[in-house]
Length: 300
Image (cartoon, rainbow, N blue to C red):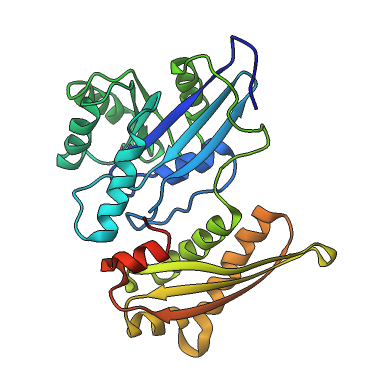
């Protein structure tokens, strides 16, 4: 949907950073609703996720990416490729770091990549609510010596502090352009994808360190029944090993029921309707190393 005003600004903005610095939480806070999953585990996000922020005179298309790191294995390589692709041909980049961490080799690895591009980079220092304010200025000075940032914005993705300033700063960097998507749209992702991600989020949260990253969720049935104000969903949870299946199921199926209950709550809030969610667990040995299965599960 185009906007004819020459004052209207729009463009694409990538959110990049090391794994587990709060990229998905920041995107959800900017949009005012949940489209990207978050957990305390690094590498929660696997695919490139588009979030659409609609302002009165702007539309910002945020690309949430997997954490940038040196990749090992097919699934990790896929995630890094997704992140790198999202850094090309964008109008600006948000480089997200944690206020609670000093810059290290992982940050330098990313800055070296960003230095090769032409897009202006905004340093976003997240989790400023967790440090004393006296520590913020030295941190800003340390990062300023490493890279020529277009702006440096301290924020708390968790409580929203600084996010309005961030959005205003990003808008100022965008060129005049059209409204690419309708105003009522917040993502280009299909509902089935977001549903699968919400189930995966609960698995990561409720199994914590018991389950490594060999978990995928495929929504096999998504049937709307408007006459009953109901959506019926069947989702397949795929793990790499039999012990992982037992962990997800839990004693007497207690954990899989808990995962389903929590995921259903989030899904119902997103869809605005009642949801019947049925989860099944299947073992596919070493699927994260199989090119065929990676494609089948949507990682291609």
